[in-house]
Image 1 (cartoon, rainbow, N blue to C red):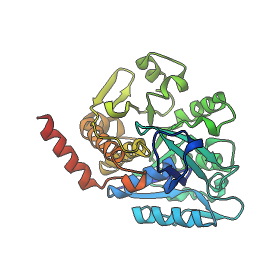
Image 2 (cartoon, one colour; image 1 turned 60 degrees about the vertical axis):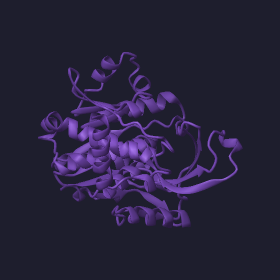
Image 3 (tube, helix red, strand yellow; image 1 turned 90 degrees about the horizontal axis):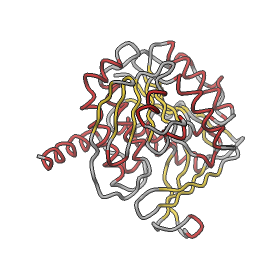
Length: 329
């Protein structure tokens, strides 16, 4: 089984103890490990896969905490760099009554943005490995160049590249800069995950099928269009798509649910030995199993609190699928 390498931000999420309040009125928070790539790595590890994190944290207590939390989840942390040049990133989150979130980020810069391309070992990657990244750390910084080197290196070995834009506009100078950057990195990915909230913003196209079709450029072999509790649609071309039904649960906190979906999806690809030369056929043959597993992973995480603590193990996902299949008759 290959390994997942997640590159990008790992930070502290401060989760409010009260729901339904704007951030300015939240009086108490609970600390939790966060950052979308880190959540994906933790998801794969907790499901039983091999996962490593490529990032940088400060030589501070928050950096210590993040490394401990990732290690506890089973993520390989020996590739995480430390620095005194910047502090570990922080994000304050407010939760609406429906579990959806608003963010306020503290990083100018944060330590993760200082990971440089010379700190990426091109010999890390193999043909059965997957590199996963998001857009949060693609702002102009040493980390952006580190992404480019890692993407090139894994492709040279025949491995797969996965991209979840995970748009966070407050981190960008302008929406247009964010859009341009995401559009520039899309052709570099083999697997692209995009949510219904992001599709029109990124593509500039309103009709869903037309917008999805425009994403098949460069190396893109599969586009996963996620729709929250309604599930996801997997496209392996503009004309070939497969729908995976979502699971309805009582939502406690959506933090990390999308990352758990991605983690479940990529775990199944690793389990099946996916690589550049076989991923299209694997997606075609195994789409139901992969989407069902990914949707269940996301649903279970939304039903829990926080990101990494709520991520399920493989046995939990399989048991949940079995129970839901029984209920559906």
